[in-house]
Image (tube, rainbow, N blue to C red; front, side, top):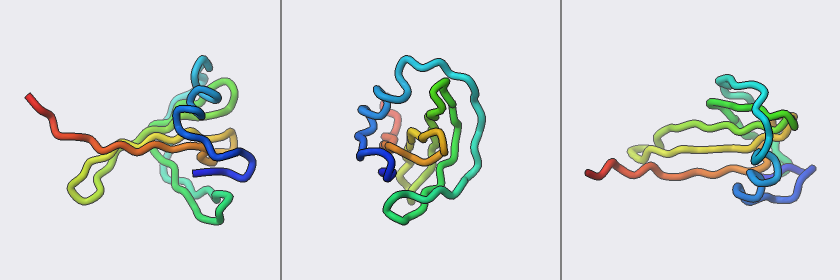
Length: 95
């Protein structure tokens, strides 16, 4: 996901730039909230959100796509618009 104010970021790059080393100032659960992306589409960030002193937030959520459980993380700018996102499949527990 990209925003017109920012170049496209890989998740790791955005984490290094906006989250790493910042002090957390608040934590909450955010219900779905529609935000408009620079490409005209909408995103609906929701999940457990930590906001940092620079105004950026890290939000994480889990869900299932059919039978595949996933974990998604987004980095939001101070206006709540995603600047980067990462989605990972959750593999079954192996003993």
